[in-house]
Image (spheres, rainbow, N blue to C red):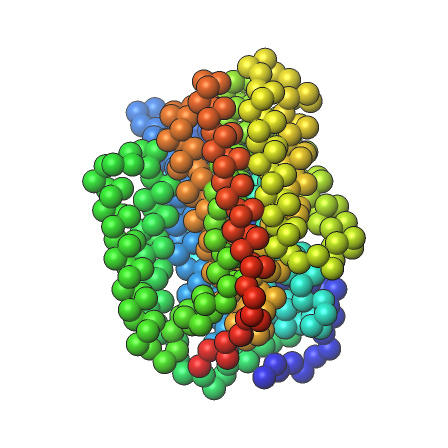
Amino acid sequence: MENSSQPVHTGMVTAILTGATFMAGLDLFIVNVAFDEIGRDFSTATDAPTLSQLSWILSAYAVVYAALLVPMGRLTDRYGRKPGFVAGLVVFTLASLACGFAPGVWELVAARVLQAVGAAAMTPASLGLLLAALPPERRAAGARLWALTGAIAAALGPAAGGGLVQLSWHWAFWINVPVGVFMVVAAIRYVPDVRQNAGAPRPDLLGAAVLAAAIAALVLGLVQTEEWGWTSAPTLAALTAAAVGLGGFVWLSGRHPSPVIDPALLRIRSFASANVTTLLFNTGFGASLLLGILWMQQTWGFSALETGFAIALGPVVVPPTSIIAARWFGHVHPSRLIAAGSILFAVSALVQLVTLSTEPAYWTTFLPAWAIGGIGVGLALPNLVAAATATLPSEQAATASGIVSMARQVGFALGVSILVAIIGSGATDPDGVRAAWLFVAGCSVLAAGAALAMTTTRQPERVPEPIG
């Protein structure tokens, strides 16, 4: 049952829950452009951090965040989403404060791990709370808005980071503190508590730990391929550990009365297809985002601030696209909008490939294609979460959103690692960059095909009973 002793102010609740998601997503990308200044600040007369060491500021967050999304979603579904959400916000805010005061690289990495723990707790809980607070007819729109904030955060991260670095790299973290404090207070005051599975058996904690370790090994193997190499012993060991861990998780799930992921959940065709589509689309999206940044900085000579704002102009079209699509094509199945967005993103990559110029020509060769891609993102990403959760009971919303978010993060890591394999150490070779844009287009076409698979079932899907 849903327990709440206070009236639900849906506007305020929506702002708090989507705002927290935006803040967590922004932190995945805001640090990219601060690397140089962090490295200089931590350098001494005799020692300076290597690029490999600095890369862990990003990798540690990505690995822990992706690994904990599903277990945290399952735990908040079982023990209460509001306590999980508020606790995640508190941890994230305090860890952000610690990041800004970190005296060295490894202290900063440790604080980033704590940030990721907080983000992993509040992200899936936020969607579960949002769907529970909205009437049934508004839940699909709420899911689209929740996903839209994540997409905008990913694209605006470099711009926000570029602006904050002009003050100090510390502000890339400290900006979260006042926002986080406000959200904690507002969440306690306005967000209703939801405890729909209070009588359910305790979830499979061993399975949760095994799943977290498996996903951590998978993402670690992917994000470190630039340094380790695809065929190196550490990479193969990490990927093997991930495969063994996932196999062990499946075995445990089939033998526990309350598994972390109900196997029946994955047998829902729309949910399974939505996750495959999410993985494929974000593989291309993650590769294209980094490719655009590298091209402008390494070939065109753009500064961090110039690159950040150049990247940000594309996402300007994402919110209006999503709003217009919801109003004009609300009767269209989400899978068709996702497929259309994926095809548009493929077209944008092909336009980048054809118009590529080593001479700086942002307004004529980059922005038009980037805007087409923004339209594609506005159609695809918000509808992916809506399609994944449309047939699910609200009792499973946090777990489901954790799975979708995990697929998104694994897709990002996979896209970046394959991009690095294609272009090598930099984006200065036009032939390599063209091959990378072709890869982005291929991922997007595959995502369109996976999206259309959501509507190929002839029989209505059966929604599983709530877990436990």
